[in-house]
Image (cartoon, rainbow, N blue to C red; front, side, top):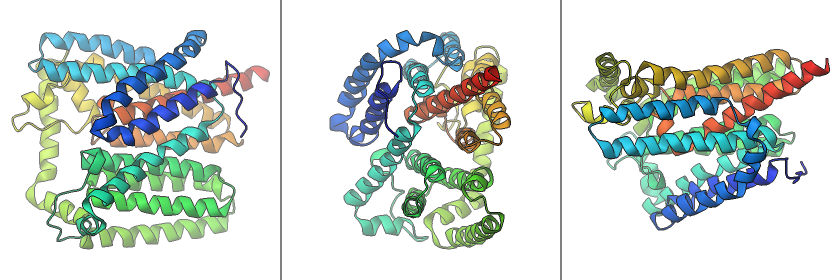
Length: 406
């Protein structure tokens, strides 16, 4: 697609943010470049795109107002916070989420080149995996995928293996989105190979949450998007049957022959999964102690006796921002769901329907990953949330324009 670089197209601004994202989550993961890219590159990205936001002020996603209200509401938690350093860090991260949604969400609504950012999203997990193999050697990385591995879980530039695993899931979603649009078989083959590499990355990370989210993304794509990709019913049934058989064999192999399977088995035997439930219950107890304003951002890990974080978006918010803060955050996803649902229903028989389904899949990814992670305080998820909000707004606008034309 040939890009239109008129001042109101948003395409120049999208390229600026795509470059910033790419640098931040590749070379920006190295400590030597990290601060320069995050602050210098971020400042430049904001500076180059502020004019566009100013002239498109009315196009700013309404969901950003909910997130901004959540940020202001979170200030009340500072009255009860014990760890002010953690509180201020989470407050900063939440503020960055608001800004990224305002900027990237607005740009995404205006730009006509969604493929650009999809191509950018698939790069960081490849880069991190390459760094892992380069620094720890391929032999050690392969050993990590085996049941009897004695080395620790791998994470490389991602620092945290679960963080790396979620990056692999984000890359997988982007690859599936590109596959839905591709018309050439060679591209499909390349993307399938990429999905296999992401699966290998998750095995190396031995992240149970990433494995579950990855499986959900693949299954969701088969259900929501495969009918548009493969309109022939017979061929589609064959592919679905092959997928089910492959999934069953893969799951059995993983649990019997990999470090990920070994960790999962040990978690059930040692009661680790019960600890996750205990964290959820503890979060609800914290919420009941202070249901209005919570205990302050980032205070869950301080108040939890063993020093664990909540592993859950909504439990974290309930415990730290109270009921009102959680409702504001939940309202963002409800708003996105309503816009996507209306668009899917209206464009049911058009080419746009498949693209709407892809972003339904993105919403599923965020909600699923939020049951294992604190998404609102994660920079990579902030970009993903902004993209989802921007696309939901674009689909809703297209629906309204189509209705007005009759």
